[in-house]
Length: 481
Image (cartoon, rainbow, N blue to C red; front, top):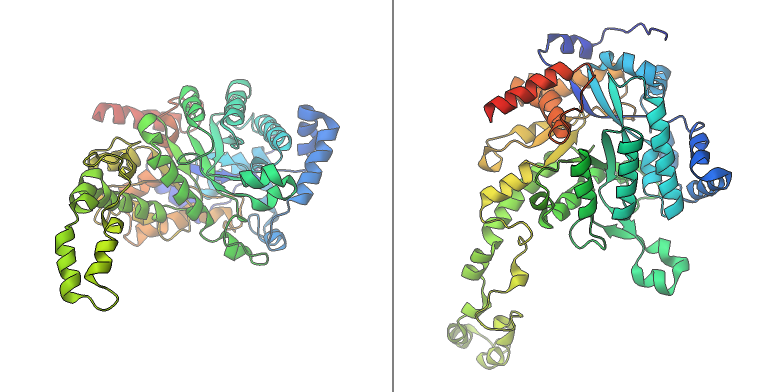
């Protein structure tokens, strides 16, 4: 193996000063696409390769021309090609100040959401076979995440089992949502079905029950993590990549967490960690605080105390209409329409209406329950240059003085990293500005990325360069407990 002569960077200098390793929760692979058909052919033969290529040509994303000019890392040839060559990638992590990285796909984003069932499932299988082979010799420094198609729980379970049991994967990239055709259009006018695709969650109001998949993640010890890439779903521009990209990961992840949380996934699977990548954490901070504030006002007891239509005082309202009404707002017209004030859909008066309890899947009795069900399970990937990363650690603003589990996610391989050497140093700027403490930064770049995966798989870092440090961290956690 050729040794690459590594350069010293601001990030590598910073890493040398730290007394803990740096774990990258979300670097990226840039696939050498000319290799992919070899693996796709193994899965489905040459005809499937042709079908895949036809599907890709048909599904070119809007704004693709703009993306071509800035989809991957920097103008430095070495940085782009590094993310294609695992042996070189493993050696150059030091320049980024990174000890170990979990790497997520790039081409896999598109394959994961292809609408044709056969093509999607075969493409994900082929990519996983390719990643497993390409990264087999660099497991001490990095590990790839398997691409899991999520259109149905069945396909998700099957690919996760294959990836873990047959290929040895430890990480998995899920989707945060699925775009599906309108069911009525698909049934009555299938030729127009794809034009009607719209958002569906993996939790609340989903057409499928994804509990078997979450259960499989727990069984196999895999913490699923998702990127949102369905740019064309809402507010899409056919010409402007920045319009389509800015905030999209946060927007879709916000909806995904709401759907998973309110459908009780974290209640039913307390051992499950779920990650949301590339959207930062500021939106999750807002959501966390919003959930607590909404629970305070919209829990069942509060609604019955303050908003129960059965408590509406018809006689008082009648008097007010009589005393303060006008020719339109008369006492008589009010009396003729009292039902609009007192009707609430209950079949039996005095019975608490189940439909007002938006929290029933959680079994939450207090705001502390909301805190625990949210904070314990969700992790948020934050790119190094995101100026709002510190909000996860703002105990003065966050309810109950909570810290959200933000984790350092370099995004190496993509356009926002123009130089490997900038990554860790950029992430540290918020510590230098006093927005994060040194302990916060340690949690951000080491503790949270480590616990995201080891809570479910204590052996995730076995045989890696960070094994001893992580074992010490987990031992300290056990001692504290």
